[in-house]
Length: 486
Image (cartoon, rainbow, N blue to C red; front, side):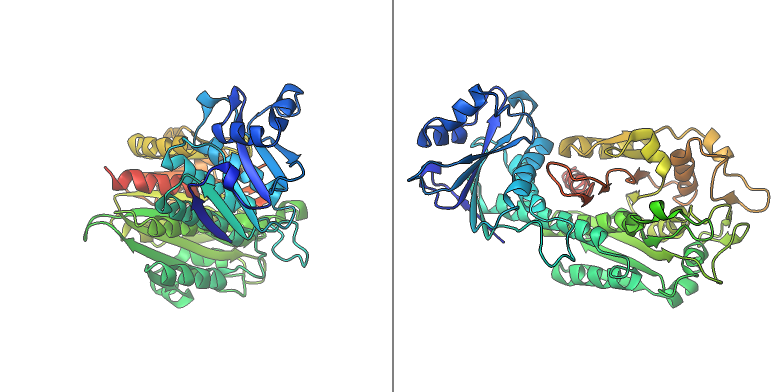
């Protein structure tokens, strides 16, 4: 799919489809110009109430005879005063979802002439995300990307950044959407190697032997029932000054989670290919950061395992020794993500990072607390968490901070080891999981993002097909951009 820019007016566009933006309090200038060209059809539909311009509402208009463009899509932008990066991203993606239902050679996006570059970058990314679905293995795809997207009134730099962001999000989505017999620790590591080669990243891949040498006992225990060996992928992007501490991004990569001996019911296991969304998000984020050539050092670490069942399964009551030396009593083998991250976070400390962000589909408890569309934030350093909150506000990806009171740590005390891997009962489970992770970051500023809800959509949304959403790639890129300019 080709993405180009044009300075031509909407009247000069040559292609099958035009997309224009419509506000609740008036047409955008391109929509107003197009309305005149097609005989006032947009205005009539607004007056009839067929176009309300509510966010992400897409209306199809058949262009009149003699007009070169066949179809016009209006996409709702809400009120002008509420316009933001999220709305731009979702509006462009919503239009893309609709137009991708038919084969289109060329589509022109004329949402508005006066958006700042940062907003257009988000919109271009949304247009690329919206045309890609989760039907990766279908012979007949439900969605077909257009041959060319033409964007009005943008510079080449904005186009390149928008494309890079859209491709990074789609990488994350593709990895999460791929089945567990396709994406497993070794094949994920191979995908990471391709990203490293294409973006001049340094990469290390620790295999089982290296993990044993490094005494990653917690991570190895989770993987030991699987016939597929674990991997730890470490990617380094050196865009900042030499020797400057990096930003560390850590991702949980359980490529399939059966629950282990604490076996999940079948209905709960169906979507467990998505339990590696944290690692996929981290890989997408460092791809985007490198593509944008941000002046910052970043290290991304992906802990990759399968949590399976066999005669070699780790068992309830087992005591594991993590890489940090802390011992862990296992009381639930389905609380495995935190065991993986315990060792990966300890490896991250070796990089002497300025700060750490970890991402994980860690707990159903976070979904109970915040719903499917909001990620939970938990931290040992409020100022660092505030930086992440500001980045999420800028992109519109919803995150909410949960309290990390010391009383929650009391639940993790074990009678036989330093820690147990679950708290007392079901209450506050997202927080006790985060308090467990906090034990492995020392004094380094750290924020944990529980993305169990928003990383995977069980039903389609106007701006995204069902399945992986690519949630948090945009926020991590924005976080890195802000850190690079401080």
